[in-house]
Amino acid sequence: MTLTDIANIRLANQLLIRNKAGSISEIATYMGALQAQDYAMSKWALGIRHANATESLVEAAMDNGEIIRTHVMRPTWHTVAASDIYWILELSANRIKSSMTSGLKELELDQTVLSKCYSVMEKALRDHNHLTREELVSELEKHNIATNDSRSSYILMHAELSGILGSGKTKNKKSTYAFLPEWVPQKNILPREEALAKLARKYFTSHGPATILDFHWWCGLSLTETKKALELVQSDFISETIGTETYWFSPALVFPEKESNSVQLLPAFDEFLISYKDRTATLTMDHHKKAITRNGIFHPVIVSNGKAVGIWKRSLKKNAVTIDIYPFEPFSADFKKIIEHEIGKLGTFLDKTPETIYHS
Image (cartoon, rainbow, N blue to C red; front, side, top):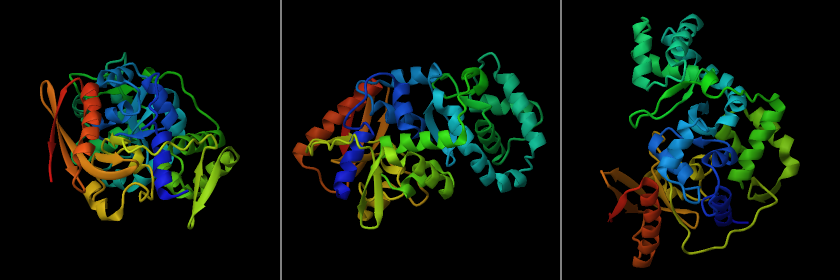
C-alpha cells in the first residue's frame, strides 16, 4: 500500500466516490461527525457524499432535528446525527470544558453566572421557539448578563457542551439555536468504554486508512483514551505499516478503480483533509500553504484521484453561482471538462446556474 492508495481508499470510505443514497442523517451517522464551522460549506460536505442531495434536502434534515450542528469535538462545530449527539458529548465535553477554564475565569463566568445563562436561554427557547445567535444574546442582555468581548461565545459554547443548546430550524436563512433536551428528547447515553469503541469504529470505518495519531487529532480525547478506544475495536480492523506509521482500516475494504476522472470540489474544512493529523497522502508540502492558512483556515480544495490540485471559491447570485478556480498547476482542456461536470453537480445542489472563472 502506498500513500496514493491510501488517498484513493479514503475517497471511497468517505463516500466521495461511492455516494450514499438514503437520508442525510445516515451520512452523518456513518461519518461520526463532520467539521462544520462554515455553515454553508458544512451543507455541501453532506451533499457531496449523497447520491442526489440538494441544499434544501440538507436544510430539511437540520430543520427536522435529524442532524445537529454544535460544538462537540476539539472544540469546534461539527455536524452529527441527532441519535449520536448525547453519547459523543458525554465523551468529549468535560475535556473541552477544562480547556476553557482560564478563559472563563478571565471573563468572570463562574458556575453561578453560567447557570443563570442556562436558565434564561432555556426559558427563551422553550416550546420550540428557536432563536438566532443575535436574538439569544439579546435575551441574555435583557437579564443584565454582559455579552461583550468573548463572553457570548464562551456562554453559548459552554451551553452546547452542557447539552443545553443545539442547532435549530433555519430562520430567514440564518441558523438558530434550540433547547436541545426538547429538540432531541431521547438521550442515548452509553457506558464510556462502549462509547469509545463506537467512536473508534465509526472513525476507522469511514476515515480509514488512518493512524492512531490521526484518530487522536480528530476526536480530541486524551491519547490514553484514544489508544484504549482503538484497542477495544482492533480485532474488527486490519492494519498496514508504511515506514513508521501503522494505518488501520476495515477488512471489507475494496480498492477503488484508479480512474482519471475522479475529481471532487471539496468544501472548506472537509473531513477528507482536516480529519487527519498527517495530510501528505492528499496534500503535498509544496502546496500546503495554498490550501491551509497559517491560522488554520482550510480553503475549499479541488481533488483529483485523491490528490489536491487546486482551490476554489464560490460567489452566490440570485439565480447563479460563480465558481473561481485556482489551479496549483495549469489544467488541460480535457481536465477542465471533468471539473465542469463536478461544478454542474454543485450547481444542481444549490439550484443555481454555475458560471466558472479560471485563474492562472
